[in-house]
Image (cartoon, rainbow, N blue to C red):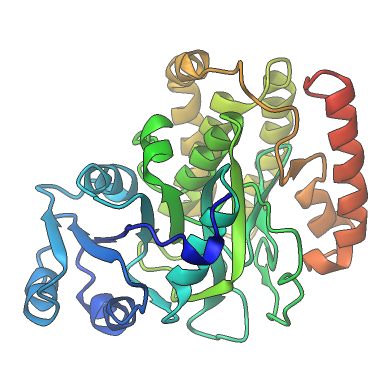
Length: 368
């Protein structure tokens, strides 16, 4: 095993930008001040028409600038930039993320410690309120068996105060946040990168699911700390965000759920998402209500494509247990039992996940 402290690979930090001058002015200085000895910053610009590129080139001449000829969104914009990255590790960093000077030292040490590690994230705190976790990734992403994502430190809209409660928690997670995602460059390429049909939202969960299916680990490193402003692309209540989250969640399930489980999972999701749509309707949020049904329409119209992608994905090396994934229903915990904090239900969750892992192993890795 590599000595974690001596593992100092070249790291390519890719910052995707579109008309983000205000964010670059606020957040790029901290990234440039990173103390790690071997890293490059790549500013991948999605055809901005503000002064983003002039600001970056005038104030940070060592930054590599990649000019895209179109706004390709998160997935394609980052995929194109990754092809030009030189690092053994790539960090996809949002342009509204402030970092601690030693953040890369801790992340790279994690990769030196765990040879099977494919991707990782730092502990993510809110730059608006640094005492609290960030919505986008908190202390590491999890996924319930119906495809609803949650984080250690954040469940739906309930975000916890960081009291160090997850610093000693086992760092294996299901997904690492795309706002600050560190991944081995060779495995990112082998996995096919981000699925460009997602465009934005949920793409990092899909990627991490594929990496776990390939037999690799996803982890969080609480010693590496970043602060995310959030909402820079689409605000939380934006119907476009609702559309992409629902559509891409269904697509991710269609691609990755184990054989024999897809139909019951999609049927259950239809019922639960119908409730969510009804809730939007009752509260007068017509735009979000329509966004859910548009997401379903587009998903089912393109179902032959998603099933083809599912058939193209290799399953022979898939492990029996996917860490951070289990029978715990985050919808039930949050809306029925009233558990609004992960730490309130942590012992119950660990018992369920332990039982589920043992059952999955006994059944040869088949879905329940």
